[in-house]
Length: 176
Image (cartoon, rainbow, N blue to C red; front, side, top):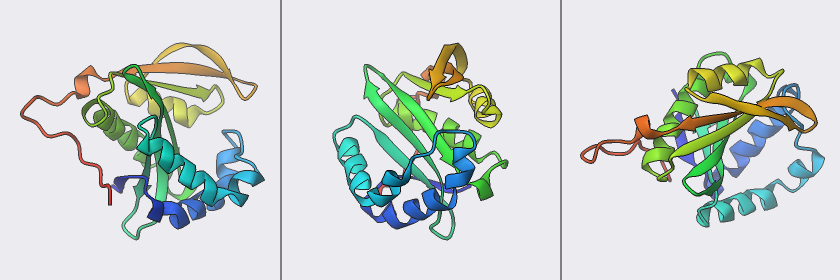
């Protein structure tokens, strides 16, 4: 499995390549980021790092053996013991259980490293792969919602089972 790393400045080139290579693949199931995202990528990357430094979001990349970014998995809008989960996996790495593994790992990090008690997620009804990942990871459907004008579902995951015993170490995430 790849390594989950906390987003840092040095990830920018590989992350941009990941987003460019998978743009069409992602746009088939989630709204496209738009041309401005790519034109202003460096600025956006710095803004994400500032949000992370402020503790309102935690951005992670899934890095393969050659240093390539195979996915992203993020916690955004961190507040009141909870956060919103978001993830995307490269087309070439899809279908191998990577998303499910990464979501489960991030549940452990959320509980033990970031002190969160719940995670929220959402996906469109037509994104069967994401719905399956959330179901396999123990997320429960809690309602319906619209996502960029498309029908979707809201999910919730209690993180109590991921809390490490006092003598245990929290899951590792590489920061540098």
